[in-house]
Length: 194
Length: 181
Image (spheres, rainbow over the protein chains, first blue to last red):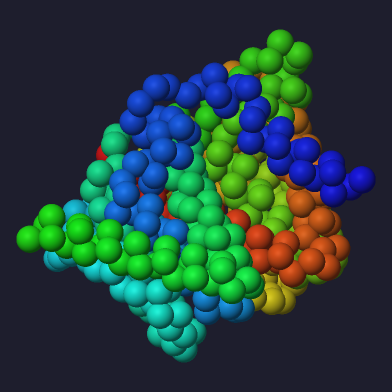
């Protein structure tokens, strides 16, 4: 029963009507735009899902350390983007993240945890930077940011859940094919940039 | 104060309930209380007890001190930085000595309580509003820290760390928007 009360309280806090009454449409002033922002770009979506998928391939503790580390590094990149700190090759970095993560999932490559965190951290920086530059102005910056980070986290979770089907032989092939598709998407973005 | 930090609502039920709603619709306050409660819960039952003893009282004192003042924009930045740090601490899931947790709770309560008091303003009887806010702080602290301390599921521990990471990430992004102006 106490657990139910805990979750009910969280739900009530999340959907308290007064909060919604203060939302304005568009820009950073809405939870909805924060939720939608990470899923409006295919390059970002495939990379976020790939992080979750690769985490599932790597197994514990990487499967839960990557989703803990990624949002913070991504937000650091976002901060740099908003403050216009120079970071070269952002679009190329984003496209390469799709290629590399897709290939890692396709070939089920396992690397040491620190190296995996560093690699995903670098990609997170590029993605965050791009988001930071695109972030619209608005008054509800904190609500927007929370929704934005939550949406990114849900994409990771989607990747992790999808990765869980590796328990079955057919599922393992499906995950590898998904990795190949992600890598191809990355290549497509690279060709578009050049 | 910046609109992202909410403002005093009139619920029609009186000052006490206005104070409750004020805290619930002020994301920065809510995030720091949630973050501190997660942090205290990660330290076990003793951590929860320490935070419950320190945070609401410090919040009340800070609110009392803050009433006559108006806060500058730079104060908002300080609040953002502080709850970002709290989020990072939760994400790291380190064990802290209880005296440090006591200090963190005391500082947080004074800081955010001060902001609450300043946003409520000196006009009118605001003691009830403050009490409403402080009561909500105490309830959230008690429930969340107790749940985390009593938790025996690994996935919930991971969820706490992810929650801390989200708080920190939201803080960094908000800081960027704030600094951008």
